[in-house]
Image (cartoon, rainbow, N blue to C red; front, side):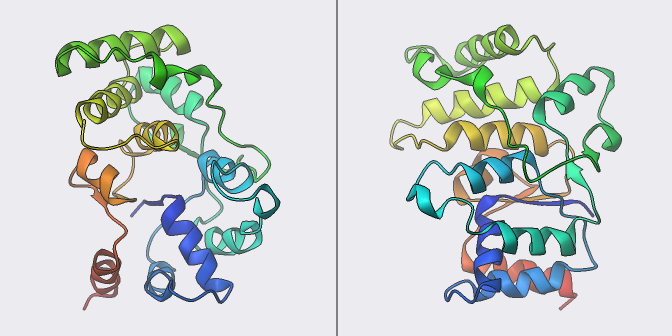
Length: 222
């Protein structure tokens, strides 16, 4: 089984290993997943660990040793390929060898520069279907990609988030959506936050304590 731990899950497992309180459920999940799943790191983890959008700059990277321990125990040496490679290879179909490889590095963060300014440029007065089509064309223009699953899912996530007028956008939204568009088609479970879980559906699990505890019970066969 392939499981993806988003930064919330991975960092809370790392914080538990560092002895920080309040992350015990994530620590139990980490122990339960060992030997049962393949959970690879990705360039998105590198970006969020070394170049976080929030927090004091002097603390950037402090979780890196513990994250290496987490993924050293769960990844079997595999990494997620950069999103550009994954998306480009989707032109021939969805294959695990186009998603996983052993060439990743904790020195190679995800490059989101093709999407710079995208959120600010989204039209705010279009119906959902038209907005999704506009975003899909814009993503294809910016990346040179064809209409592959990555492009369609990214357009879906961006357009549906724009329809939620009650929610204030976050600085991390774009990174989260690019991550999900890269990861979701290939994994059995994406462990993420409640908002992405609601957008993605059945293969996504949120990060509330009860959800984490249910995962522990499910993977331990209880």
